[in-house]
Length: 317
Image 1 (cartoon, rainbow, N blue to C red):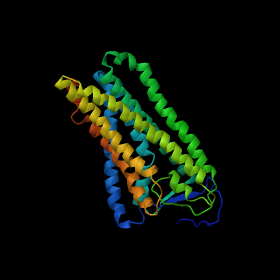
Image 2: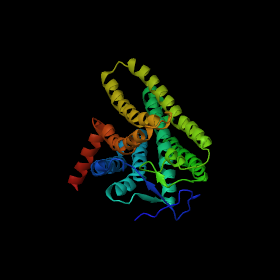
Image 3: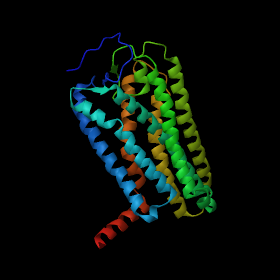
Image 4: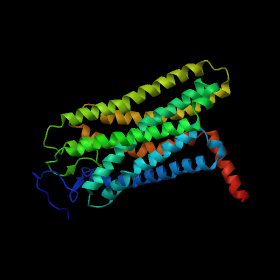
């Protein structure tokens, strides 16, 4: 049984908990959602682990592109694991609680990993720009040390930004009930629990979203504008097809990630937006990470060749 909380109770302590309402408004959907989300989560785990292991084992994939792709796969694994197991537990049983400490940790990692992915996708677009538009200088521009530095910058920027923003969110007094109208701890849903003015927090969220969503998207589109001009001037049909395959895959991943995020964080709030926001968040936390490995590996000759070499090595053993 869940403990009753006083509506006028002030700040939560580490012994307190939140109730994640999630999809409780649609109880008939919870079993279906559990099965569908579990399937997508398993696909995410298997697909992204496959990319990480294959990129590590096959020396032909020891290139900047697959180094960043491995980072993206590991990031997606962490991102989904920060929220999906808790969602599955809440969908399966009557208890839909999360501890105060658990909510704090979840908010921190969701913000950190989401921000890091925005930056990493910019880095990957720069890698494609260097490969297509500066092929003669590619090995110099994308030196292994520089690649590691770019990857580290993506992770550090995400975790640093999240530390500031999540702290700012939990500093406000939570004076209302502990009912979080979402399936994970996220900023807008937590701000609704406050009994003080949260305009400063909302403005901060809007500014941070603009910095780490709009600016990366502009940089990515700029990179692909330059790539498009270079592709149009190509004479080789084979080279053109290879560029379109690799760049097309990245653009699809960018679209699947940025469009839902922009719908979630850059639209003005409305009365009907909360339920809509849950399904949008479900898409970019569950569906998108599971599709990334498929997008990058289907029709990818490098990956198919690596699989054949690995299978040949195993059979040879």
